[in-house]
Image 1 (cartoon, helix red, strand yellow):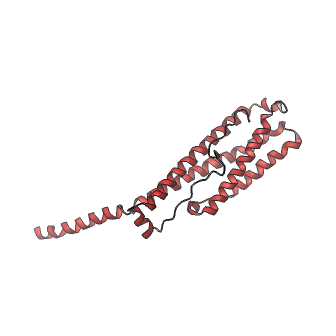
Image 2: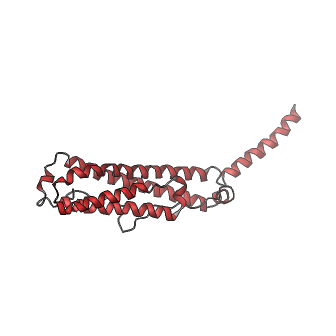
Image 3: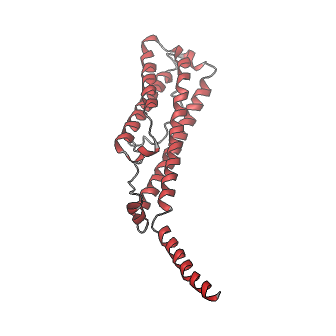
Amino acid sequence: MVDRFSSILPRAAVVAVASVTLAGCGINSVPTAEENAKAKWADVQAAFQERANLIPNLAAVAKGAAEQEKGILVGVTEARAKATSIQISADDLKDPAKMKAFQDAQNQLSGALGGFGRLLANSEAYPEIKSITNYQMLQSQLEGQENRIRVALRDYNAAVQGYNTTIRTFPDAIGAKVIYGAKPMVPYQAVTPGAEVAPSLEGKL
């Protein structure tokens, strides 16, 4: 009985040491960091989708605009269609080209919304817009959604930074390269300085 117990101990020790060694080589940390980044990206997509869902409500607000300036709303609608047509899956987060296409579409929509905001800011030309019952509610919703997008992007980029650091630093880099063949994820890049900061819609809508 003693001999048998003695033979088990070395094997248990080897298993324990192997487990610790593997854990230190990114066996757990690499997929954990990757899944965290994917979850944060899901939050980004949800935030952008919620913004897109608000855009049809702008049609009601635009009824007070002059006919020749309805083209701005058309631009918003077209930009929304393009932005919602480009979807990024979790597997695409390591593809710079696909990420750029998504970012470009969202930035185009942001620009179109900015033009729409400037249109409605001209309250002297469109005083009836200011009197719309749902105006203040829509303004608040859009401001809140821009803030949620900003927070979601910040959290995603932080998670990507954590993942990219994990797969590049020792000893996690061993498991990342040998076991997972891990590739860096692409952070969400602002194309213009301050573009990642939520714009203030006060006085614009």
